[in-house]
Image 1: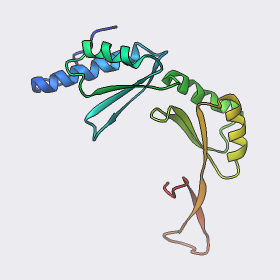
Image 2 (image 1 turned 45 degrees about the horizontal axis):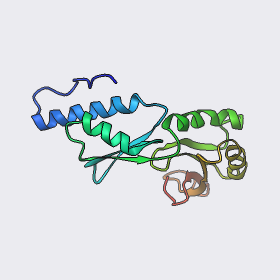
Image 3 (image 1 turned 90 degrees about the horizontal axis):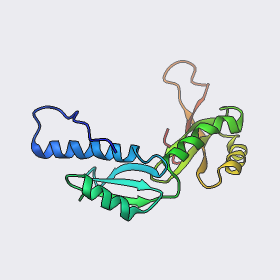
Image 4 (image 1 turned 180 degrees about the vertical axis):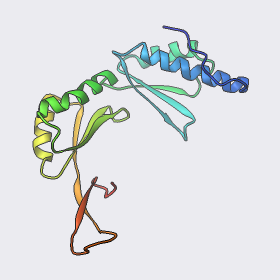
Length: 170
């Protein structure tokens, strides 16, 4: 593994410098393990870092404890799919479908350890069938429904629609 880079701002406190060094070390640690790294996110009001790997969380905890200035706010969880495999599935979606028509969005969700595909109305079942046939364990297809929007000016007899998710949020 490479050394943590020193690109932290000048003039910060020693505690902040240690945090900055730890963040850099975490980035390198994860980047050095592309076959097993499954994701990274913050929890607890951004006070703790969660790293996910596809193998041996105990070994990663030991490695990180030896590497970091302060590993007390870092936890490791085990997930079945690597981030690399999520990206590969995401990138394969247009090829599997043969088009991007009917897709609103698609991309990895590291905490859920899957690729979320949001399909437009009228395309959900077809897209779900095609994608879950290729990626049954890591692709989740959700639908969107049209929601009426009202014009701010002009002809009020015309109604337009915008796409929102199931909760009604755009």
